[in-house]
Length: 199
Image 1 (cartoon, helix red, strand yellow):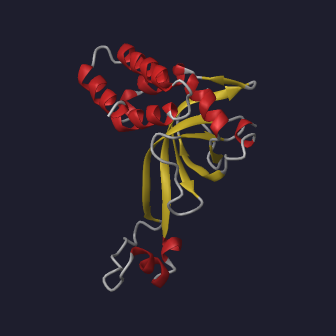
Image 2 (cartoon, rainbow, N blue to C red):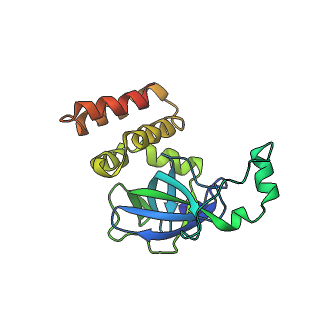
């Protein structure tokens, strides 16, 4: 399995909701979500998703979070004085599906079936990220789902991808051309994303 080939990849959670286009994953550790725009691999053979929304909330919706730090001098002290907090909260993230692996070949299409509930979710190592982000058809699939993903997420994905490429300026130029082709009829959206790619 590709996500196990790179020692930097690690298992961080499980899928708890799934559909054709998106997944919701629950992290094993509080606040241990990958950043917005990053790439994760789900299950085996892997399905690839871009992180698009991170939420930390009560495990029990009927027990709202209350402020606990009035007498604390630091935020860390709040957690030290209230060791039950990690047991009462959970971190979840939503991922936009942008591809999958079939017969050891990366496919830049929606998977035929979404990942199953309780599929393991992994961060991606450097080699996998470089390989996936070098193929601009994955970016095209993401932009093709523009109604499901914000400008901020697309910009964050491109900036993340750029940091793994050796030809930095060439990569950004190609990514910008893809955006221009895919969003040719929506100039405000195109300009909004380009501002986030080239601050």
